[in-house]
Image 1 (cartoon, one colour):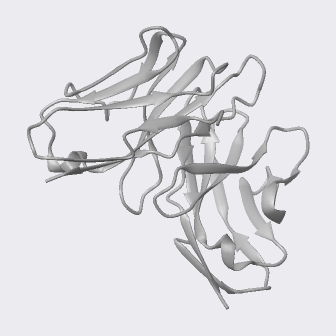
Image 2 (tube, one colour):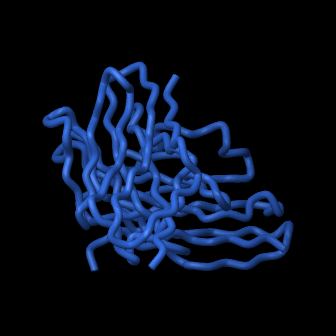
Length: 111
Length: 116
């Protein structure tokens, strides 16, 4: 069975401080992992994806994620948060022609 | 604009009415997906097409739901006899796995359905 767990439903950081959004997965197959961002009343925008070419993946807007097979994790990080990063973030696994999503993490950025 | 487009963006209807949503994928993408997202949750898979063939349907897709992609281009999702529980954001995505082996899905802006 495939599942994706986002460990924090809400994360609050101050502008300029690091961001860590946690994601764990369970997959019978070699995972194909994605991070998407969703701003209010908008669709999902692709941030980055893991495709087994490299364990550290760089995405847009300064985000990156590290795939750790031993920990079944794919955590999203950013060195310095910006006010515009405030949004909902979703981790997903492509498990056989469909994406299985985590429950999402709402990132709040305080000035 | 070469992204995925969806229409309408918002739909308010009364319980028992039928509604239809349209999705236009990125032009060269042969796969098209429908997801449903309720408030505070991650999207859930409903169904997907490869060209005009509907290859997989979730158990979430009850008999009141039907999706089509008649010419392998745009797709429609119809909900008959809407219920208040159908209120959600309906998201469409497309991909082109023959070129992108990771089968990255690109999403449209969604259609928000409110059933009164």
